[in-house]
Image 1: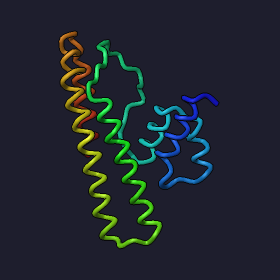
Image 2: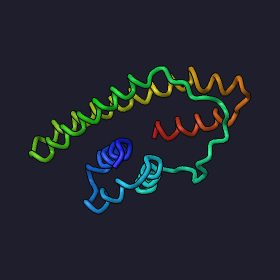
Image 3: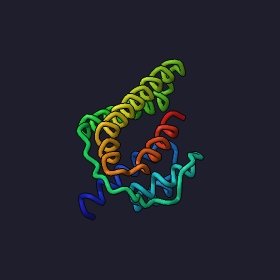
Image 4: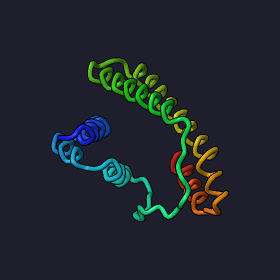
Length: 146
């Protein structure tokens, strides 16, 4: 198995680990990240398009990728710690406080992504006359806020 395939397998297992069976985890290991996210959208009732082609031509230049990855890694570690709290029978109020902290960390990471996207991708798309990018941003904001 190649390193990228092993990394994808590990990432997909992490995403589904919290509440899925072994069979589901095995199936997720063979899915691309896009396929896995699409399946999770269906599972959790998140509205989405089945048109996965992106007709826009602008480039995606992000300056905050490393910061976003670091924040996500911390949030994943924190969420794993919350899972261990539940497994060990810790007080519900303590678990809820820690879940709120994880949610806050994820929301703040989303804000960084959004700001970076506006500052780079959307401005570039507007220069190129790509109005679809603004529509896609609006949809993404609606989903993020819900």
